Length: 288
Image (tube, rainbow, N blue to C red; front, side, top):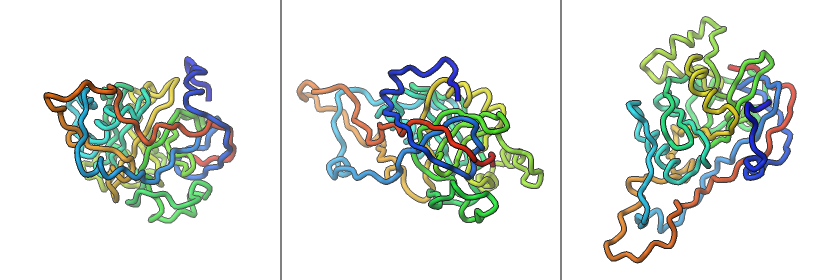
């Protein structure tokens, strides 16, 4: 894929990109360009001191700005953590709330660019079946059609039909793209308008959003840059998946007689490393 405006050599070097061939086969799009591996999703152990008592900090906490958009408590807490910790590495980011079937797109500073309903994997669950990205869609059982939770480095690409998509989890062949309406029986456009989150569970795992939302919000936000997609869990806690913290509870104001702060930098995130270099691959699946 050719990035509009181009990515600077400094950004690619900072990302620690290296070539690594992978073949995927489910849920996103047959790619005519390059792709990348996703970040590991294993829980990160957190020191007991952090878990049992708040920390003192000398700088003000940062928050994501949702504007007038309604969101769940988990979506707001994770977005606040992303902005406060700098986990997005000054890149745009997306919060995918599976429980509410909503997608929130933020700029690098945590300002909401737009929100929209989304269609998600038919089955509830936070993990992908091992090797599912290499299987044909016809072999995937209903209970295997999950949208995996986790933190993913994402970028734009095109399928073999020339349609743009946002790769999320390449290994599991999960992408975020315009809603697919080719199968009239699935009534995907109508499902997007339904107020019931359960009506939004229909895909093989991909994240379907309204076409206008993709064109006006998602595509501009990720044009010429990488970004981070945070898919919220529905069977585990956000802390287990992201090693995140609640900004409201994690820190307390410093005491009046506290000594000068040693550092004004935010706490380091355990997920700051970017994945391997996007690479050429053949035989990828069509969108779902």
